[in-house]
Length: 193
Image 1 (cartoon, rainbow, N blue to C red):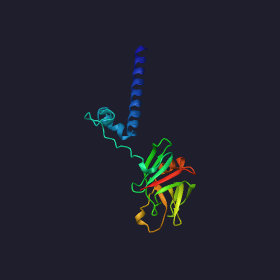
Image 2: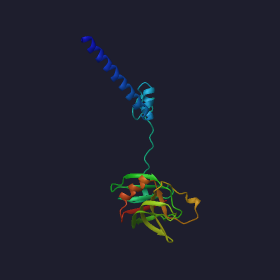
Image 3: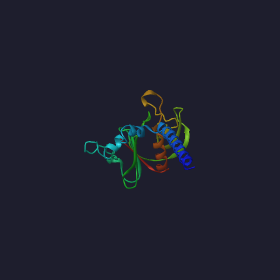
Image 4: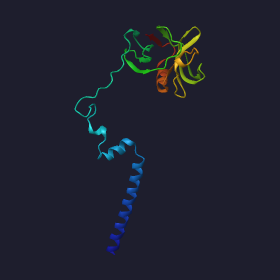
């Protein structure tokens, strides 16, 4: 009887190992590339080979410096839009940028100056026929309403490609959502060169 028990235990162990092997193969087939690369490198991914913040040669990695809030943009909590840099900063009451990002300018640019958010819309159709969301308006120029928005399809127009006068300063969708939360009606908007 003891010989049969050991045979059964051996058979069950072999079956369990086969199941574990199949499950392991299935898991590795669906693993992200960076994890499968780590396995091919003997368990050491490129990120694991170098200490965090170093280039692998003992030197610190050069990270891009954050883009500073324009000095001539005033004080306090505000949205800053730099025409030349095609960039927006969401600046907190402490004068530090909570977020900064690139935008696609409109065909009609607002004059440099200080404005306030006048109205907001969750979603509308832009003057270019594109569905837009998180619309934050702050001025108008010769009848063209100027404001920030994000295209629902994620597109950003080429202002040089259209002869139509539009005032939508287009943002990526996540940036538009951030400005929507930040730029309540009355929020200061400063336009600089």
